Amino acid sequence: MRTLNSLPFGPTTAEQKPAANDIAFRYEPNVLCPACNEILTLSLELHQLRGVQLSEYIKTTYNFGRLCGSAKLGCHVCALFESSLWTRPQDFGDSRMWNWTVAFTLLPATDLNAILMITIECSGASSLCGHGLPLYSNDRAAAFDQGLPVPARKLSLGKCTGDVDTLDVAKTWFDLCLKEHSLCAQIDAEFRAVRPRRMLHLDNTIRLVESAAAAGQDYVSLSHCWGRQTCVPRLLHTTEAMLREGAGLSYLPKTFQEAVIVTRRLGFHFLWIDSLCILQDSDEDWRDQAKIMALVYANSVLTIAALKSADSNEGCFTDNRNPLCLRPCIRDDFGLAVALWSPGRLWEVELNTSGYGASPLHSRAWVVQERYSSPRTLLYGTNGFYWECRCAQASESHYREVAWDEEGNKKTWLQRLKIGPYQTDRDTKQKRPVISWRDHWIGLLDTYSSCELTVKTDKIIAIMGLISKIERLSEA
Image 1 (cartoon, rainbow, N blue to C red):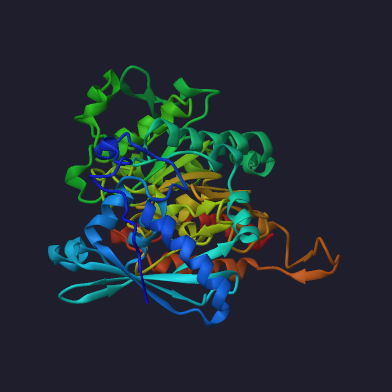
Image 2: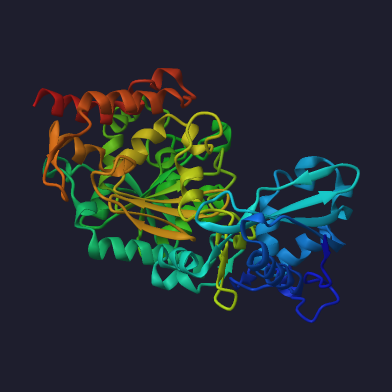
């Protein structure tokens, strides 16, 4: 058993950052407090001595509240330890946990790519353990960094996913897609001219206009949860004149406001939001626009998805996170990377979970069609923000190019349908079976059936656009 002599960042240390309470505060990755610096040093020394036989209990002289404070002040590894716990005081229902003592255990790694693992334990009236944090060697550490696009590798990370620097990362992904991804620009010629009847023009106000006013210009679409309909501003015969005259940003609920901010930041002036662009008290208008809903998303230049929000008042952005838990701590001086999530894992958890445990947006049946139809989607989740297009997937911790025929590529399902029952493998040149339209249909039904509908009579129309495409291809 060993005892740490050093302490994490705290109010009496020179490293204290009073601005950490400011929402605009930005975190520099790979910073260590004295305690974590000592932990990593000791871990390497003991690993070199004992190898796979390593098992060491390490006491500390500080409590869990001090560790969390250090994470807030910018220690990258403290943030990873805090996030590794199965639960936290606010979830545990016991504020005394802040005073529980902290200890660590060094163990052999369960991940074959890691050299060892550190687990955290908080003890007091009860005890609480966390996931083990694997430590990766220098060659493996480099792989974490290589997954990031160059602009994001040394980027300081914001508490709010809506700050200017964070939005610039989204713009980097978008510009890269426009420049290099020809597949993302493709749409069937017969449908290219289909546009929604109305859009919102974002000039000095938010103004409802006919689509003719946006002729020749791209538009952005919003995918969101309505929640209780009484909370959602809607286009009605009684509100149409006011919306056509122009409303201020404050008229909109938080999710819509933040969608406007993203749209403007990306350089676009037209935004489509279903509740404000379809007459909600006209059955005829709703039926006409619902029929082309898949094409509205398919023809938009980008879809903004409010992944984490159960209604229009919760917003797109996460306002008070510690983003250090999303990124591996990479220290060249130790030749190590410490990571809670493997590259791409957080993307999978927030985006590809359906049914129980899914994000509020992905529990909504309409979003299946919206996600599959949109060529590019910028998604705002609980922990961070994400990019998905036909050629790439990205988060603040990774960027990965994806093949158009990759099974997990939700954006190219239609392209894969068109190639028939067999395709030639690019490496072996051998023909191999590919997923058929029938398999696609069954997969879509599985995903769709796990979702919910507020209006039960929408069951068919909410996926009609995808049904029509499968129907045409199966007849061919």
